Image (cartoon, rainbow over all chains, first blue to last red; front, top):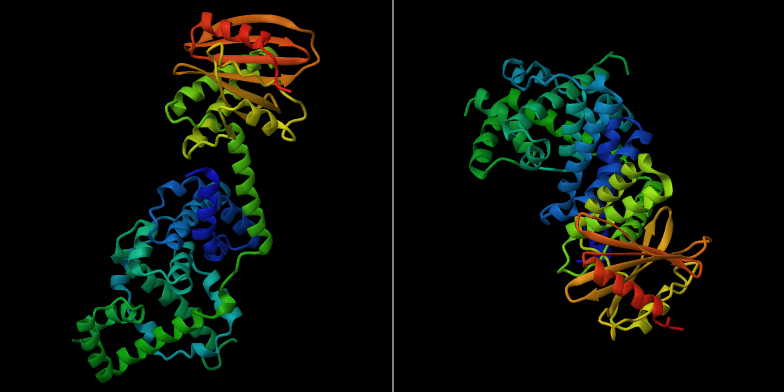
Length: 177
Length: 255
């Protein structure tokens, strides 16, 4: 295949997922400018490595590159934000009291939810975005993040618990709105 | 199923990751257990809250345009750097030839310090081009195709000559990029050997063909005439390459 055909094919299979790529980068990087940089670099890398794409799931493939590009970028530009390894096992001893009260999240407007997600540690933001916005399944997330499925499940559970706590706090009767 | 067994299954259930048998058992438990029913509703409510369209950031139009522009400009750069596409010539061989030529050119033009950097740049840019198939701009055994092909692509008209009679048939041409400018590259063949002839205009006076020290087995001959400078490079032996140069000099350019 010549280079021009390759680019055509890339445009047809990978670039339709540019919105998904930018969305992930935007949530990870927390601002538009950096998200654009990461997305652009990731897209160019994706084209460079397009030969290694086996045609299964272009979106998951592109998102993997976005994620890796982002963490490289983070290391270079904001090394302080790279937290130590998340203690994924901590979940086992955490109680489930956060679920003890009913939370009416229907009333949570987008801005409130956006703030709650933005306050999460980066690994939690990542998994919430991948699962809930990008719609990847556990197996895809595990491959993308290079962790076992068990870790995906516990990390997702912890991220949700934190979100529920934040959002429930917002809407507690008499609580601050 | 008790609560302890049910709790870890609630989220996978909401995420559509549970198998049918587990779903049946879990649903039965949720039906009978208010605490787990609450956890289930909360999980669903959270998922709903996260699914709002307003939370999704679509790529800005300008970013999309920038990326496409970048991809296409890489393509044209690559095609300029991209070397011969004849599959019997390995890409590695080509990269060495190119690097050597560039090295020599840079030595001549800018001295040794910038030379290494330039060579590295060329090698790495070639390594990039190895990842994809190479682009040959014009492949033709017909010089009447090659000559007009350059029209409008360069700000000069390279003297295209066919030396098939002398045993150096012209087999193609392309645009290349050397020392910061577009140059013409004509490709000739002798048996299994390729000769690359790089041509671009200069203001310097003419000079006789001079063979240079071979680099990694590649012979180079440089000369200038009629306000053009010429570099012939090949793995052909020095004697035959000089024959080629003489044949080229005495050949008649196509009109």
